[in-house]
Amino acid sequence: GEDVEQSLFLSVREGDSSVINCTYTDSSSTYLYWYKQEPGAGLQLLTYIFSNMDMKQDQRLTVLLNKKDKHLSLRIADTQTGDSAIYFCAERVGGATNKLIFGTGTLLAVQP
Amino acid sequence: NAGVTQTPKFQVLKTGQSMTLQCAQDMNHNSMYWYRQDPGMGLRLIYYSASEGTTDKGEVPNGYNVSRLNKREFSLRLESAAPSQTSVYFCATRDRHYEQYFGPGTRLTVT
Image (cartoon, rainbow over all chains, first blue to last red; front, side, top):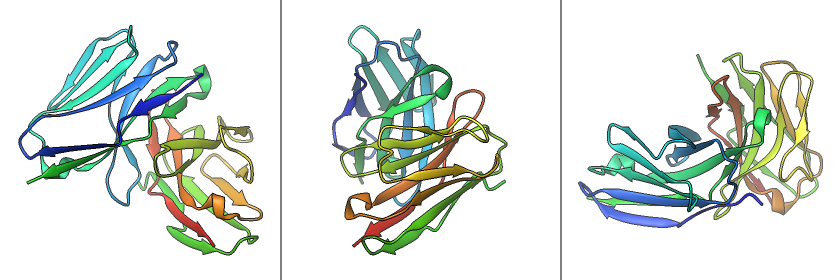
């Protein structure tokens, strides 16, 4: 079946690195995504990785994909208070309908 | 460009009342989606529309109906609201590169 799991909460100090983890079950996933949700707002795409890649770096963000273990992580370097939000991973399944299966979300709290 | 807009932003209903949540997009995307977000459960797909004139059930369609009025608009209707439908509802569209764009959400409380 399709299931995406994340830990619910992560607390870090400003300036440290944050690592948010995600596991998924559908081995046919083609794309995996990270979305950010700030309080009272909708979801915003942060980055994505294609399933044939191991790593993708975009400024302070690094995505690592371990396809064998079905494990995805998002590392945020030099975490700032503005990074405080809920982070969702999602896997794309289902071909043309682009069905996304979302994780439960990880609340990242950045302490000054 | 407004992107994806949703109305209303907030709504309180009594059990048994009906209402329609509106969603509109100005990005000329074919695909549109309705999700609900509940604490500890992530986002769950209610219905989607791959193109104007077509709609399909998602993961949790019971208690809802949708209407794809035209390419821009995709509405979600609750015919007889129940407390279990208290949630935050998000509309989204998808572009040809398969990226989804979300509206700001509608916060619905059913008492």
